[in-house]
Length: 100
Image 1 (tube, rainbow, N blue to C red):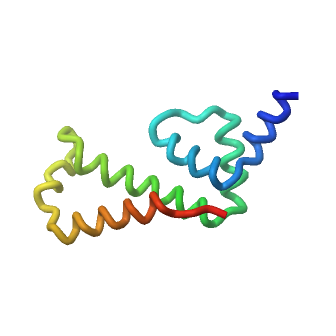
Image 2 (image 1 turned 60 degrees about the vertical axis):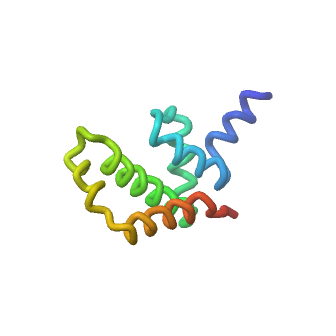
C-alpha cells in the first residue's frame, strides 16, 4: 500500500513538491520517476514552469559570479550597487512565491 502511495506522489506531485524538485534538481540528479512526475506537472502548471525558469536563471547567475574558474567571475567587481540590489530583490521574490 505504501508503494502505491509513493508512486502516486511521484507521478502526481503538487506545486509544493514540484518546487522542491525544481530546486533539488540544481544540486542532484532526479530519479527517472521524479523527472517523469515533474514533467507531467509542468505541462499543466504555468506557475511552476515560471518558477523553474527563475530557479535555473538564478542558479546560472550565482554560478557566474561566485566561481573563480568561470569566465564570468570578472562580472562580480563590475556589479553596481543597483544591480546587486536588483539581484537580491529577485532572489527574495522567488523565495517568497506561493503556489496554489
